[in-house]
Amino acid sequence: QSALTQPASVSGSPGQSITISCTGTSTDVGGYNHVSWYQHHPGKAPKLMIYDVNVRPSGVSDRFSGSKSGNTASLTISGLQAEDEADYHCSSYTPRIARVVFGGGTKLTVL
Amino acid sequence: QVQLQKSGPGLVKPSQTLSLTCTVTGYSITSNTHYWSWIRQPAGKGLQWIGRIYASGVTNYNPSLKSRVTISVDTSKNQFSLNLTSVTAADTAVYFCVSTNRGHDSFDYWGQGTQVTVSS
Image 1 (cartoon, chains in turn red, orange):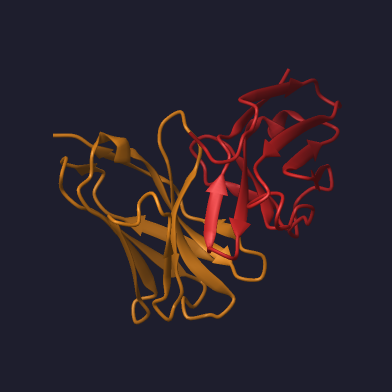
Image 2 (tube, each protein chain N blue to C red):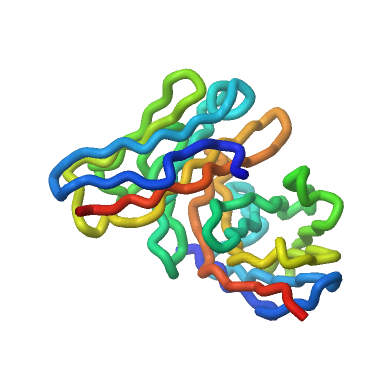
């Protein structure tokens, strides 16, 4: 059982927006802004999409955005495209104990 | 561009030690901008952080695996390694070696995952 809770699956049609949630506790997601999101196409290496809750690394489309409210972080993908179909994982880093926890992953299907 | 190339057996017998090595190219493992991590993913499950190491040799481990895990670094070869002792079927997973950006503690470069199966 993963430390962070994500929905098992979400879906949307091309052009639509979807949001994936990632719920933790006040000692991880809620306590720090070290939340990251990863896109994982099966058989490939995961790719960092968002770090520090809402920062996009260079080269990541601005269709991807992150936010946080309380103990829940969210990843929003706007203008869905077929290539966005993948698994998405959230993680949270707790500096006080130097520990990383992940969510169980969310499978995004583009209809 | 940082590249991480993993080596090690894909099959390990129960109770034995799983050993993997990751060679980093395109970047010095002694750089103070990164540390070096291992992550795994059992089939059908989420990612699990195993632990990380600084070039200095300082380590941090997942508490649930700490008693069985050792991560080490060989700066002369630009490599870091994972040893996981007393393995069981529950350790069967795809294993990734990953660079961790110290500025924001996220995993910015990933090696290709390798399936490691624990079976007799």
